[in-house]
Length: 313
Ligand code: GLU
Image (cartoon, rainbow, N blue to C red; front, side):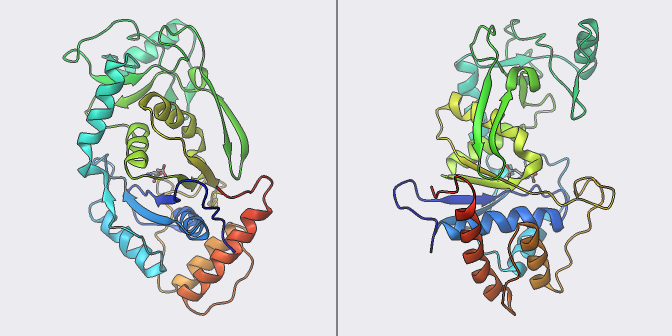
């Protein structure tokens, strides 16, 4: 049994870790789910090391993650790609958004943004970030004056209508976000010259022919920004499945930031079994990772077909 229908684009999935540390129990769940989903669809699975923000990357972590995936038996179908080598693609995409009027230059500092929000009594931190008050939206700064580049979050270029996007997540169901209110005009290129995750991920997924994004639920609320960029750049839409998060002992999402321990791979089979249990897979036979993974593809297929609306591509 397979989730393949043959009617649509060939399934291409990816796992896109940021090399800010080694894989841990939480990131393995996303890696395993994206691998299983690709295999269950008879599709391809790629690994992209998201090292566009060199300041946050840990030296050697990208290679170490590739070693961990290999030890787990999560084999990719192509050589891994590295975002740090793809800068020209991001420059080109930004250029197109500037030319169409959707991206604009901004010379605000964190302090000037906070002051402008305070003046409007609009102190609204969102995940610790401030929703941009729109100071530079109509200033038409020249590239030489811009520190950062932002995307207009409104539905229209004149900024009179809010943009509300709806999408279907394969696990979370129907989702909706008013991007204008919830996020505001978001950064595409930062004042320090670094590319923003939103732009890189959209450009890379399209350039690599990705059809399906399977990743952790903590990234779900980035999806509408990415859909918006796809629309404005004329790129194909993707299917999304956001996987459950692993919680740490403090009740927070397990992450490198809150000290998640790197996966110890003396027993890769047990690491896979634990990640599989979190994904809702039953206990599966298999004394090797290869046997377990083969059984897991079948179990994953059954799990997806049982979901409401769990039809294949
Ligand atoms: N690099 C991102 C992370 O490790 C994931 C990007 C994605 O899957 O869209 O959190």
